Image (tube, rainbow, N blue to C red; front, side, top):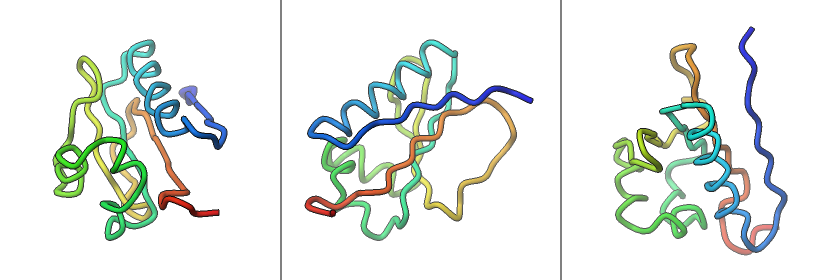
Length: 104
């Protein structure tokens, strides 16, 4: 069984930046080329703090199903939780549970 890399980010003011930096570091250190950003619902994606962090062009591309480059040779795509499936090969999963500003 393959080992699974996990990177857990504590809640805080820089949690989104820290999570994405961790994903990039994992991709670079492990030679992983696929990152899946998992969200509860795509319909509220554009109002999320993650989408705002990434910027309108990247957020829109992800919502349209287009992968975006996050680091040399690594692409990220957006999926809803029920859609998270695919071939069994190395990839990075970045899950976000608290997406709206002010959500407690």
